[in-house]
Image 1 (cartoon, rainbow, N blue to C red):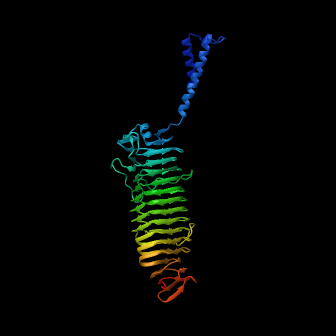
Image 2: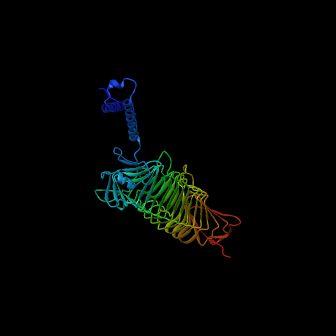
Image 3: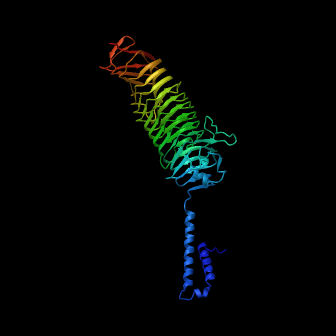
Length: 474
């Protein structure tokens, strides 16, 4: 079979049409000199070629909003809003307008690199203004560029149950997610994000993680409710992150888990409560992290935690209460050179725990941390040290401690300075635990020994014993 090239076919047809219109025969065309009919033929051929090239360029030009059926993905390739998507995707099997402002998304929605996508409740057409986006199946919002989410609700959705998708304690149910991949800024504000995520990186909830192309950055979550997700927030390597003024509750794994090199991040003025594991943890080489001004309570795991070589970071001026058992209000594990101060801790089993695993690994020991000016009221044990040493405890305030102000185990050390003691109980549980007190004036140990710590530090090894310390009164 002979295949005639498209360009040849078009030019041939054009020439035939011109011949018929001008009445010029083929033989006449071959005879010089050219007349006006010859010029018309040449112009028609050139125009046909130009038109074909224009059509081919149009075919290859990227479409602003496109749908790939094989990937079941709507792709945003230009700056756009959700209303633009509604007006472009005219298929309820993909995106259904369930009612005014409420949409059912049955596909992934992906924002391309260098693109800003807006999902807001404001719209020139009130009937199309987004209020509630329900995402079915394991579809998600995938962001390579910038996303701006404001004044809306986003959840997973089970169409048969007509409700968000429930999750197991193991995170085994695939469901909707928000994944920022090398995202270039953006925010979630005045919104509700709930019932998202499962145990499958990077689909844990609001997930800024797992990209080989680099980290996400310059992202904020403000004045929103983040609840009942597998993880409320997760990041890896992200930087310039602000999480401020939100409520995080009912999340299954962690409420917030900035991880693996996340840095320059502030978590401030949030209420974090009733989460089913750790409330806020920064783990694995995080730095320049600030947890400040948060109200943290009733979480099944630790309240605020630095873990696995988190360093040069701060936990300050937080209100933490109703954290029982091993759900320590503040936990410092295998982390170095951090400051913990100005926190008010109450109605909990243990106030602040500084600890390590008994067998140290590459994350190192919790050391060179400074814990000062914290208040403990209604706690069983205020300060706990396990297999850690080289940390400074100073000027802490003990209002109501029922058992021990300081408790040590597994060859731990506690270094106390600039401290006023009022019937402070110190306990060394097992192994050789070292207590050192300096620059705290004259102290009285067990009502018998007077020692001026401003002249010489007081040191004692405690193993399976307790002592009581008071500051001498003038």
